[in-house]
Amino acid sequence: MDLSDSPRDAEFRARLKEWLAKALPTLPPKPPPDDWPARRAHDLGWQRMLYDAGYAQVHWDASPTVRLIFLEETERAGAPYVGANFVGLLHAGPTIAAEGTPEQRARWLPPILRGEEVWCQGFSEPGAGSDLAALRTRAWRDGDHYVVSGSKIWTSHAEVADWCELLVRTDARVPRHRGITWLAMPMDAPGVTVRPLRTLAGSAEFAEVFLDEVRVPVANRVGEENDGWRVTMVTLSFERGTAFVGEVVACRRVLAELAREARGNGRWDDPVLRRRLARLNAEFRALWRLTQWNVSEAEASGGVPGVGGSVFKLRYSHLRQELYDTAADVLGDGALDLDRPWVLDRLSSLSYTIAAGTSQIQRNIVGERILGLPKGR
Image (cartoon, rainbow, N blue to C red; front, side, top):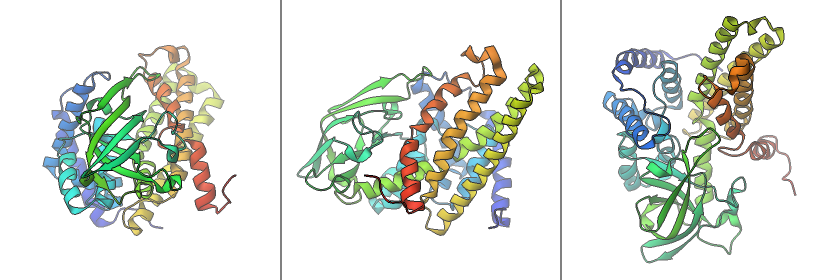
């Protein structure tokens, strides 16, 4: 498989790099990490710059290869991450683009791309995290609306979101995977209560969301009623297949910085540490090639990543933790100082084997859907 840029892709890469070199110096300073309203404004301002320059559409209207180049070059240049716009750009938006009606695509996609609306993800529940199909948030039809009651947890960016990609149970009589529906819920609807959650790293980008007879128009349903599990698999394929691409580039940059730090503080003299850094370098290079392969597969299958995304997610989750454990070895006693580089990243890395589907779930997917092993009992 040829993984090099085509002439057209190379031209896009060069043009993007030139624009980034001019645009990034004009950005305002990044707000404090715990000021989410300010971070929302900052992140959406960057998204508007991308839109005005003609780059916002790469998330849906370009080939997977072009999206990969975009994520690679923006991360290399140190451009802002999608931040508060994460769910809209990388989860809900691609799902609506793939599964929504023309009216839904016209309503929701342009505001996401223009940096006008933020989405959050309402999937996990206190009793249905890894076992997502066990969700209990109910929705019943009342004329042209669904009436929704229940609760969600680990709802990313709920406190600053305009919309929520919401999974609800619309039929409790059928097997549980068949009674789920995917809705777009306005976060300002009566009956929605948001309670931020503080993480181990001290940030509050997650929240509990409580729903008390919230009315959601039937027109906000993406896909058919009770077909939400299939639509959700589309969402999760984007989350596991391409949403972490920029982070792989970031980890490779951190690895180079760790090597420089080790040379400067004397830790480089430890042969065991040098071998760890070398192995991580080889693993991240291999992971990047896997990313390119997954993107090529997505391009051949109409743009939706396949189950190979679970292989990527499984290895990346553990590799990221290994990277920041190695950072702690490089820092020595400095690994206890929350103001030092990489220390908070190490704390946040602990969540990656849970976020976007636990490693246990990813192993089940790999075993059953790729290796053809029988389902466990």
